[in-house]
Image 1 (cartoon, one colour):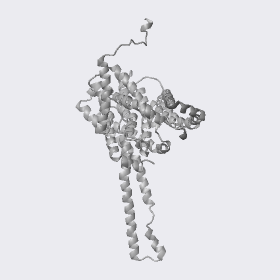
Image 2 (tube, rainbow, N blue to C red):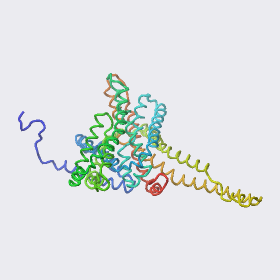
Image 3 (cartoon, one colour):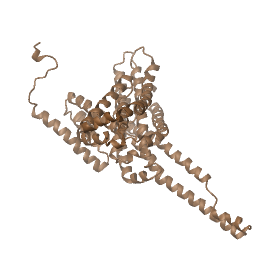
Image 4 (tube, helix red, strand yellow):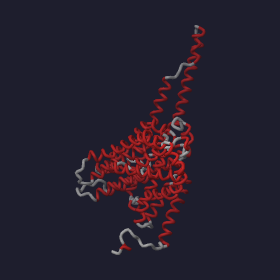
Length: 488
């Protein structure tokens, strides 16, 4: 082979007009469709997914090689969406909400699994297939969650429910990775330890989540704030901040990958790491640099490619049989309910708080009449008793009104944002289906019919969830921000 045509070299030639037209129209229409969907449905990502479905499985306009390229490039968009979530995190408001976030995540995982076992038993699918499909639908689309949270307005992301949502979505993603590892092991004959297969992503995730803030606070931040280092970065300006930010992001992605946990957790922790480095008086801001230099690329190229790549993965033409439709829609409704009920912890916290307030209600001031006069007449006693009952009734009505006006929208905010399954759900379903078709031991981890029913549920949840969430934010966003679960 001549050195001029060795592997790794590609002859340069002018691309055909048809290729240019397809690529330009794909990117342009993805952005146009997002604008229309955002205006009409308050969920712009649906337009990008629709364009992906049309250019991919429906019309087959894009070559498979281009689809694979866009999946890889779009994943950078997903990483940056999650990275921004960490970069804008407020630790003082996030950490107190972690216990509720953990309970929220567990409810949002266990209920879809339980519903799947019950429903698939009625459908006649084996329990192993119910576990595989339930694992996919127990997940939450981390990219979609952070995207709709960002689209809902910068302030909602820093509310108490916004922080709960971030924590629950991250925990969902880690547990989905654990379930994915289990599914992969079920389709192979490898002699590896199942305990280690399950335990590795859990141990790696917990270790990273604990070690990252410790290293940040006790090592990286003092080193960065040492005058010479911070001054050097300040003199370099935004290029220096961008270089350092990308280096840290890649380092965290590598640590997460080789440790065996999800790379998205690494992206989130990289954002929190960077946001804690600059001193307040330095004027340095990684978030401001990200906003100015990367958001345009993220907004108009990388994010559209990511959501369009979800459309590539939907076997659209195979979904349309009567039985698959009705089974898939019923399954989707149950899966949406499973995530909506994840908002229960918020309702319960406020419910118990209201009960405590009722129990601690002080006596009405009119009771002081007896102590001041020494004698209370029957008429005075009746007046006081009536005033007390009215006071208690008024207090309970006000508490009930606050519960309805503030707590219910906050609980719905969390539940609806978790409904979309997106890329994580499709990934788990496809891995389970591939494990069935390539299994050497004949294990059917997920059959074709169950796989397509699961795809139906993922698609419906990913479409309907952001739409209803957008409507809720439009109607109740200000009330959520000003309520008990809003801004501190």
